[in-house]
Structure formats: structure tokens, C-alpha cells
Image 1 (cartoon, helix red, strand yellow):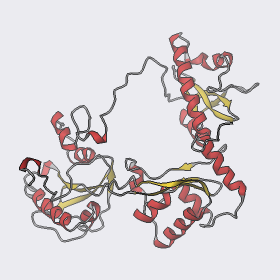
Image 2 (tube, one colour):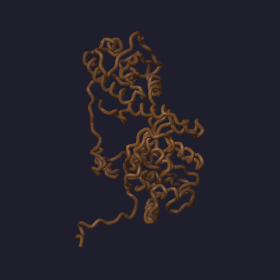
Image 3 (cartoon, helix red, strand yellow):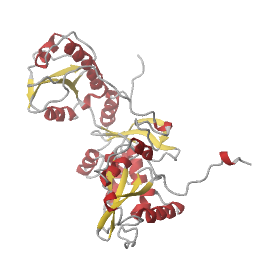
Image 4 (cartoon, one colour):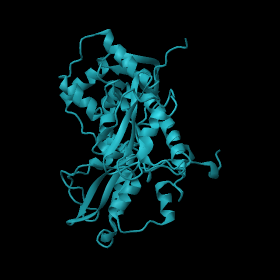
Amino acid sequence: MVPPWEQVSEPTTYESRTRWPIVHLPVMLNGLHVGYLWAGTDEVSAGFVRRNQYLTEAISTPLVWNRRLRESFAQGLPAREAIRQWIGRPEDPVGGGVPAGAREEVLESRRALARLANPDEEESPLDSLVYGELPDGTPLDRSEGWGALTVELPPFYDMTTEGPVRYLPLTGSGVTLGYLWAGVTGNAALFEPRADAGAFGADALSAWILRLRDLYGQDVPASEILNRCRALPADPAAGTVPPGTAVQEAPTLDDLRRRAAVHEQSLPLSRSPRPEDVEVWTRPGLEPGEREAVLRYLRDAPIVLDNDRLVPDELDRTRPRVVPHTYHTDGTWVWQGGVPYQLEQRDIAPEDGLLQHIRSRGYQLPPADPAIVERGKHALRMRRILVPPPS
């Protein structure tokens, strides 16, 4: 017989806190927006948040929604389905209702919803316990991490600027790694890696941060950075300025960043949806016909890399390893096996850039060509996902 102090009772309703993004619906009562019905994208958390300006008018409203959620939990409904079922149902005289036509909105956290519902209320340090955290942000459940680290950076140049910027391209490993830039005014300077330089661009950023830190320590103003760059010793990670390259200028730092985001040297990679990415949960669903066409395209594309194993479903912690650990390509994009998996399992569409590309091709893959697979392999090598054997 299990002692009473070791007995664990089965839950009777959804969890009241989550560290995943949430969706929410408005709750109206007699024409007043009295609160929000919410559900975690983890499908195991849900609840009701009252707008405290209507405390008197909706004093018993939470009781109604708590009861309804307990009933839905007992029926085995996933959390989001448990709240969606109330859209357009008649108002309860105490609990109110969710208006017909109400649309789910996504927020990054349960705490963000509390701020939305009651923006004028100051949060007590102890309120963090409601969201599963200690006051310093450390998760109560240590399996979810040990809290945010506090990092104090050493003195450095300003890393952003509002005005125009001058820049030089840096090359290395056979590609343009990115752009070393300095603000025309102020004391801003940094390196902007090209997205299509993959891991080589990231290495260059690390190298330039160290170099710029040294220059800052020598009181070199940002206006002299580009000239100093040419005189610095060659470095395989930081790259070099091609001979004869003139300093160029962009109207804003954002313009330079857009240039750095273009994929010309390798293919863009679409990774499997991650639960902490709010954008994933805001993607509109696809109509059944298009869904099948997109799914067929994603699945039938050539496999660039097959790790011959399954990995966990990041969007459902209770499931075993079921997601194919593969990479596919059509010669223009590369995507992980979790992209078609999540479309099939949860109707989560591919990211917009990949989806628009598939639409532009009329949902038809290009003819088989070894060059297509090689372009995909090159993209994975650029990211060091596909590593060549030692020579």
C-alpha cells in the first residue's frame, strides 16, 4: 500500500501555467469585454483571465469557465479545442460567451496575456510564481532550464545606428562572409554576416567582435574602422577585403541587413517548427486541396541527407520519436523532415518564404537532376550540418 504522502492524485483540469506561447479568445458579458479564455499551444494548459476593471460585473465569471474547462478536460479535449468550441455559443448569464466570428490571437506567454488584460496593474514579485517562475525568472520546473543568465558585456561600439552606414565586404572560404560597417555619424560599428554564408558567416562575426573590442579599447573611433580593417592581418575566420574594393554606403543599417539576408551563395534552410516560436502559431491554415499539394511537394522532393533515425516531436512532449530526421531540397530551398510532418499532423503550414516559392512553382517539383541534390548538399555543408569525412 502506498503511503498517503507518496500518493499522487490525477489532474482534474488543464495546467494553469505554461512556458509555451498561448492563444486567446475574448469573453463578453452583457456587452462588456470581461476577460480572455486562453489555451497553451502545448495543448495541456488553459484558463480564464478576468479584466479587473469589470471585477464587480464579472465576479463569478471565472467559476463558470473553470467548471467548463474541467468538463472539457474530463472529455479528453486538447486545450485549444476546449476553448474553440465556445465560439458563437449563447452567452451564459454569469460566465458570458465568446462572440461568433472571434478569432484566436497569439501571445508569447501567459504573462503577456495578464498584461494585456490588466495593463495598469503592477506585478508583484510573487506573481511570477503563477507563471511557473521564481522572481528572477528561474523556472520552478528545473527540467525547463535554470533561468535567464545575466550577461554584462564589456564596453563596445554602438551596435545600431539610425543614419546611413559605410561598409566593406569580407570574403573567405570561397564566399562573401558579410559586411563590416560603421555609422556615418556617431560611434556605431559591427559586422553583419550574410545569411547564405552559414556557419562561416557566424565564425566571421565572432572574429570581428574580438577585433572590434580590441580597437575600441585602443580608442579607435568608428569612423576609422574601415580603413584600419585593410591593415589588419589576414585571418581565416574574419576574412579579407578583396583587393581594389571601394568603401560602399547604404542609406540605413536595415538596408544593409536586407542585402545580407539575400540567398545567392547557398540555399535557404527551413527548419522544423519550434514551440517557442510565436510566428509558427500565427501561420494561416491551408485549404484541403492546397494542403495536399504542398504536402506532396515537401515529401516527394529529393532527400539531401537521411540520418536514418527519428527525432522527438517538439510540439508534443508526450510523443515518442516519430519525426523523420531528413533534409529535402528542390534546388531552391532546403527543409527538414519536420516541416511536412507538422503540416500533416497539425496543419502548420511551411514558413511563408517556402510556401510562396511552392505556390510560384504551381506545386510541381522540377525534373530530377543530380545538380539539385548537390545544391542542397552545398547548403548543408555551409551550415556544417553535412560535414565531409576527414581527408
